[in-house]
Amino acid sequence: MGMLIEGCWSNEDRTIEDGAYVRAPSPYGDPLDESIVCAIVAEPGRFHLVASLSCPWSHRSTLARAIKGLEAYVPVHIAGAPRTEGYRLGTVDQPWVVPGTDCKIEHLHELYTFADPGYTGRATVAVLWDAEQQVIVSNESVHILRGLDGIRSNYGPDWTLRPDSLAQEIDTLADLVQRELSNAVYRAGKARRQDAYDEAVSEVFATFVMLDDRLSRTRYLHGNTLTETDIRLWPTLARFDAVYHGHFKCSQQRLTDYEHLWGYARDIHSWPGVEATFDEPAIRTAYYGEDRDENPFGIVATAPIVDWQEPHGRQRLGVKEVTLRDGRTVPKALWDESTSDQPTPSQPAAKT
Image (tube, rainbow, N blue to C red; front, side):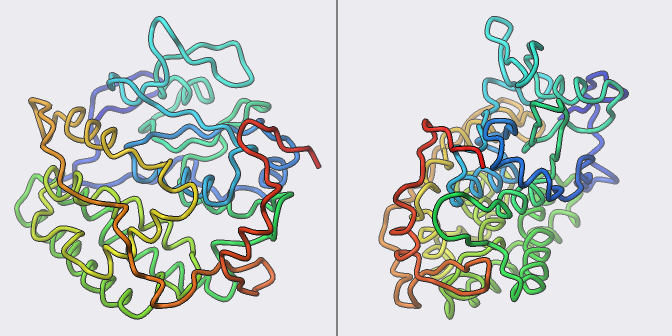
């Protein structure tokens, strides 16, 4: 997997401890300051989101950006090309110019050492980059998601994925999902001991059963309104049959075997902007083709037959809603009607 050690790239992997996978905390993991959240709207294009199509943590950030309609405020840069020294942002012939500078780089880790020449740790996505101050604001997907959600756009009603009335419930369920599903699939796939693998897989499918039961009664995880918990869960569901079932050996059952969970996943996929953030071929190529520790020959397994466009039928549980910042809920269709003047990504938003 590789990492930076005192500013120098090393192929050393410190994510495996005693045969078990351990995820390191994000070094730029503080919540976004309110001044940054305000500046994103006041200075469109100043803050840049560096993301990957394959990474589920990164996907949370691009989902929030799309669902909240922030494309005109925050440019996104997708790390691509075969990985050498971690994620790549450019090539030798076509390097990536760091926003706000003349610096040309090829690898994501060079952005980290540009900000901190002595950096030690993994160079991960998502990254929120401040082109004016030339610093990494955050590389913690939850805080980037919350920062984007906190933006009070100039267009349409001000709604939130994290209503105050649900904040504690959101934290409790999201933490469980993170620990016993989203991270557990990695603990299963990268385990070097049978007992570590068995424990992780058991948690994955126990969580699936719990979520499927919960979603038999409510349209989304906290009722009819879409919340942060849904955004944090969906990238794992989107990757499950494509890569976690096979590549990470979470093979007991597929997502499509869970009636309510699978319908819920398709429901969120149908929200405006979500499909554009989801590239299953890129995900499969990255996991199977780039993860040579688990798949040394880079053979990409045949894609499962999954129809994301199949009608989800979740409307029987209630009309989908959004929660305004003041706590009121409104039908999503009504909110859509009030955002018809929102700019497209090609039209810069006016400064406040």
